[in-house]
Image (tube, rainbow, N blue to C red; front, top):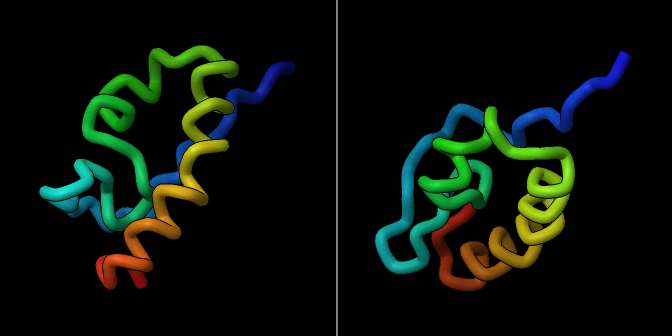
Length: 64
């Protein structure tokens, strides 16, 4: 049975106004809202972008 890619949500839902990314998982509000409807390839694309987004938030002193 196919298992969809799980959400990267860590239950810290605060969006950074400057970047528009969640300070918990790095996703945008649009990505969070549409996650359940995303295809596997869309989810993979978002997941691939998260490390760079989180690094940018860390560099700005807004993450962790």
